[in-house]
Length: 111
Image (cartoon, rainbow, N blue to C red; front, side, top):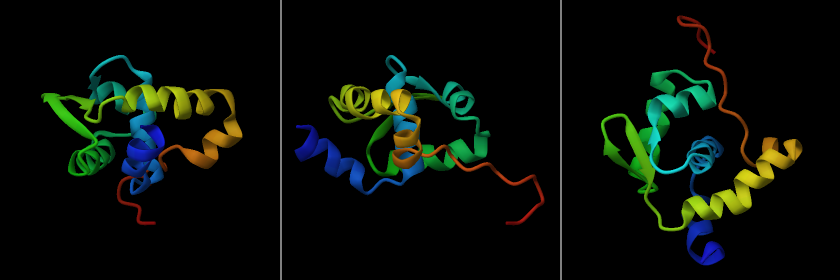
């Protein structure tokens, strides 16, 4: 199922999209958006962009206000077995497969 259904579902996602999913997979059950922001070290606006991207892709769904969950059956387990485990045990592989979200420039600064 992983190579035939889940991997193709992840293929079109950006590295940052997958970083958010990996953070969600590390949590048990639905994820509070505020907890994801804290885990990823991003602000509400930045998190909102990736929340909407994942919602539009059909990979997550809103449970209630401020809470989202992974929509695809077995994706959490797949990510835990393949991605989250790799990311936590091999820093070089983690940086290559799922880089941390970029830092936002200070407000008013254009990059």
